Amino acid sequence: MSMEYDVLIVGAGIQGAGVAEALTAAGYRVAILEQESVAYGTSSRSSKLIHGGLRYLESGQISLVYECLKERKWLLANKPDLVHLVPFLIPVYRHSRRAPWKIRLGLSVYALLAGLFSPHSRFRSVSLRDYDALGGLNGDDLLAVYRYYDAQTDDAALTREVIRTALRGGAELICPASLVGAEVTDKCVRVDYFHDGKLNTLHCRALVNCTGPWIEETNDKCSPRAKLPPLELVAGTHIQVPLKLANKIFYVEAEDGRAVFVMPWQGETLVGTTERPYHGNPSDVAPTLEEKAYLLRTLKQYFPETRPLQLNELSDSFAGLRVLPHASSNPFSRSRETMICCDDDKQPHIVAVAGGKLTSYRATARSVLKKLRPHLTTGGHWSPGTNTPTASTPVDARERNL
Image 1 (cartoon, rainbow, N blue to C red):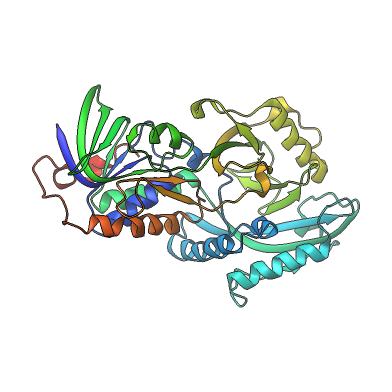
Image 2: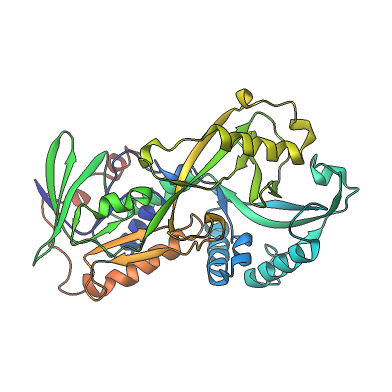
């Protein structure tokens, strides 16, 4: 059976969901091909934050921070049931690598980028005598504590909601299904895939690869391939401990100078993340014992009440993968800008989205739409046919995989 679409999106993580939402809103006929389930990969294994990325200021990624802060503002206003403001506390100690003045400077720039008079951008010092506000922080050698605001979400729930919006706009979710191959012909992109135990074919005018850690594997199944830069997978681990420390998020400095978040989550506390190069099968990524021990040590350093906890008492741990540009520098300082790559810059048929932030998924989707629009508006849409599932399948049936 052959079906026809304007765009096929491969991958139902937050980036694929956002692209599907933007394309259906623009009136295009869209299908989403997902091999496992919605938000199966990194989009359910993030730090659950909607934030500007305060630490990216340190590496000069000002435009990224500004973009993310704009998106944070929109999400807070338009998805209040999924995205909510949370106070963040940054403690500064005598041993900290970043002095109080440097933190204040960073927060001042962050506030300026967010809109100086916005209630979301304000920060202040917290009195070291306000024990309730400090939430159990270790007070030894504590020099200062700063409070500002960012937002938290359920990453998987947000991804599912964006997918639902795309489905209500007419998109079709094909799941579970695996891409076999995609070939650009004179007339279209022919796509072969496995679904329901058999080989199927669809035709589309463009394919968008939003498969995250599987981006290179998916790209290799396309002819021609999108022109990807050298990429590297970086694993990040989180641990969950069976204690509720406070209704706020702590932004602390680990033993190697990395920033680690200590966050309320599901009535307990989530701690993360780590960064290590990963070279295996993306499906097999898992926390290492060293990573879990590193995060637990960090937690115990800042919160004395957690010191009796042992590794075998963790409630949960999970690992996800980031796609970053390959570089000799450590992952912590590497660019987090989304990379949108094509087979042909003037007439793109195969587009690959590498990297991307949870917070800025809408901005990424707008960039993909801008890239594809000249090609998609040449010659109009496919003619609707009786084999088009978006025309014949009820919305509630299309949402059964969510």
